Length: 148
Image (cartoon, rainbow, N blue to C red):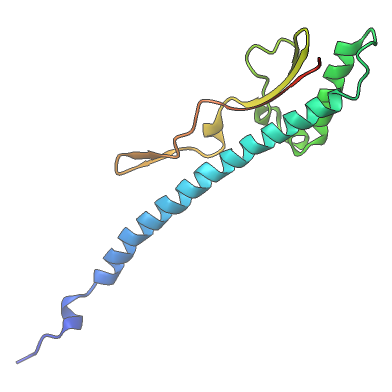
């Protein structure tokens, strides 16, 4: 008569447990990466647009081609940042900005950089009815400064 032990009853239990734990750990890792990378990109957009606004303040306002010089300065700052080496899909113009990344009003300069399709960075996946990461439609970094 053969006696059954605990080891003979539990064959394959470890691999089943590993499969469930692996799925949970994968969901956690992908969720962290899926939210951190777009947040890092958004932070970079805010920093680069603030840097571009600060650089545009160095241009004297009494010059006749002031708006063109501001546009050129902003474009140079964006091109010299790490975004300049990326394709144009990583840096889009914002809605309502008629002249590139810059818009002027009577006493304000605004710079805006956007990524219009953040799902292109980290594509969302669906597991067990959960879709993650859930990202906004666009990542927008904007800086504005009042001149007077």
